[in-house]
Image (cartoon, rainbow over all chains, first blue to last red; front, side, top):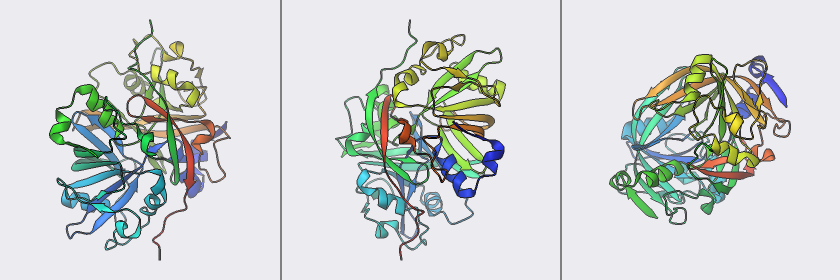
Length: 205
Length: 205
């Protein structure tokens, strides 16, 4: 085993530390967050920090880095009160990664990638047509994480579109039926295969 | 596409909604959190909510459900100020899932699974010997998420042990070199294979 103590971690180069610390907590979710500005310019950005917060009510969270540089996702969702989550499949990982480039606000990532806008009934944010899971969310709240000046955004799920291929009889969603990807570190994209599902665990007698 | 509006989501059965909402945000990290009580009883519990919060300082977060039932992980990390994160590999998914059973406090999950305790230099919490990534954390803070009474725990990374097989020259960790798993929903365990890594994305000219 390679060992790093806190002094070792502090003295790493910036890029080495980014790669290392972004990887060690394990695989991350891959979601494209779609938003729209008040003057109608769409934005799409890949996030690896979306988490499940609760099922009833259905709530999600994601972490934004400090607002010291323009963050169109943040300003748009604050202005409109809504955003979409769109899952990423294997055939679109290059496009998904390209949405992390810093485009000026007047350029929509939908125009520079192979993703297509889909507008739906209940939200003022664009969906990604190519995503087999599309979630419409309302902005609920945010928490300032003072330890590193990040922001945890809380969203409530208002509608959900999901491919029939993914949806099992008990509500469980088999993500590998559509080659949904996961993120390894900052820039690695991996495709999982299901090994097993287990029943609700109880103490063994 | 199957469509659920918010009324549909509200009227689902509890189990269906748990399965559905826990799955749709995509793949989740799989970490065993190791803690120890003040009288020396070890605890080990699987968590799918561990997220990367920042690299400098190296910070992680994870979400705990309400403290209406005993939560040994929470009481132990508050009492001792520390905990460990230990990654899960393919051969141990059944044991990892078993740690989610509600054992009484006096029973250590290390005694009812195939995981072995490893004590290390700098922390008063047990590591999992079988894990190729072992992270020692200090408890830093917690945020009460009032929307559903969950708690976001913030931890700082104080030491890290990582298998040489995983660690690449630039600090990136190739998780699939040791069959590290990811979680699909509440109870599905999947093994990813890396497809590609991409360079830092810049706007295309």
